[in-house]
Length: 367
Image (cartoon, rainbow, N blue to C red; front, top):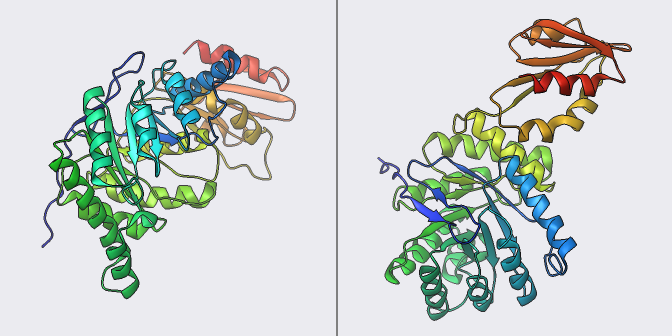
């Protein structure tokens, strides 16, 4: 019989400068992460550029993003990440490959966590240097393991068929975690990601039976919007249901906003996040009398950013609108040039199609 899964310990990140402190693991809520999808070598070269980056980060935070990771491939990017971290409240993570000195530079600022790849960061001495500075700064380290970061001996075993890729991912994480423990560094988060749902589940389950460090879970290179959400949902529902996973990222070949929204919706449906706006919308059919798709596209981000525990229904026709969505706190539907706004299935307002958005906003503000 397999050993039971451990209850993750609590790791803290942030709390420096403007950065809010966030607890990961333990009794804390599961956090949603995404990753900045552009280079930041020139992201804060001037006040306007920095303002734009800050505004976009604040938008992600309103949508439910808790942690944001940035690739740091060079010194200029490290310097700019420090500037960005000084301006925002969200904990930021520096993703470091190859050059441990970039991790040390990021730790000069309010960067909350360093993500290092065990396959390419270098010697024990370099990892020790990062761990010591992270400890001095109160920052965390995420051990990020994927198929490209397996040690040579494990890659050979996988190639020979004597070890599965999932087993190799977990074994790599075991080794790196034990190394940090030897260095007396314990503010650690671990991730083991594969592009396969089954391998992702198996690796994380294996680790959770042996260590109690919080796990960041995700299916790496999950694919485009639909396929990526499907894979992530399958993996997360299994792992979160087992109590595995303290932070998540839905990795998509799509926008950061899509990743954050998808992550939040998965947490809601798995019972790991409560409250907030729930959008109910019909798929549209030949009876369509109201532009459901266009309305949802215009309103989704704003609605999901609101701090209200309500259900909003966007229905395509008056045949099913108020009736099917009678549980909704507010809803909208229509036919032809007439749009109906309803609450709990009861019509409260009839307006023209041109005035629909303005009328909907007025009624929404009354809730």
